[in-house]
Image (tube, rainbow, N blue to C red; front, side, top):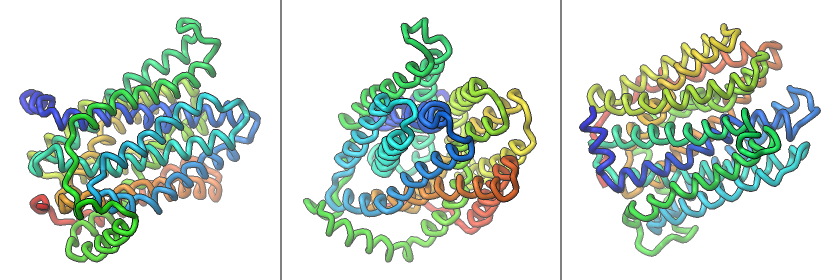
Length: 422
């Protein structure tokens, strides 16, 4: 295993590609999962009812997901038509970085501006992932997709976790860092995320080659729409890709819901916010070696059984979340999630890559990311509606198991095959 890890670090294009995950994961950890939900509820929505502030956050997440739902496949098709994946990656990365830093400027109680800036930052983050994922075909042989994909997620966990650890320390001991208080520390953290993301994006743009264009020098919107229509038709010829996407839609819905709603759920149970932040740190640092282990296990056993295992653990997570009542139990939950979260995402990406024509990876990964981000709309809504109807946040989180189980059933119809060739 050590030899394989060394080989990944020596593969300069793959390492440069994976460093982007190291950089942008700071946004996923510090902003999406960590500080934004807490700060939105306690600072930007100060004085609002807890249910109302949760609804506002849900709408913000839904809006960013809906924008990507409409844009991702078209953008992927446009990039493939003109061979401009890195250019589009740069545009969306710039949007995400700029809006992350802009959160510093939003004043207390101004929840509408905070929500708008967050939506734009999330669109930048999610839109960039379409093109980042599509570039895996430029840095890896098909036989190494599992390991390289897991390598990216593992670096993302450690990179995002290290900055988040520093950010948490700033909020706990602001005077040590020369800050006025925890609120200033959180706001400064948003700027640090932007800088971190920017710095660790540079190697990808310097070292990762641009895949060949599907149609030389044709990156127009019209070409993109034509390519999108062609992709719809070609899903009939790539039946396993279509079936996998359907399964993925359901189970990743559950995964993203737990990522986005875990802190809010813990607060609803009355757990202290400091404990919830510590739990996120546990997830990050457990996730680093676990994601690598998933990649190696998939290379040996095949991606499908490993993916099945990960989704099944998530079903158990929802049941355990329904029963938990203390911070210690939340820590245990965080550790278990860390064991499978990156692995499920990484192996999903590499398994899907097997069904994708390399010269159309932008288009096909546009659909992949579209479904994944769209799932972030339905999952939180399911939790909210179940909670409102039953009056129980516990039943709300338990309802996520339905999505995971449906995804597992559909995954059973997916047949593994050799990676697709250009």
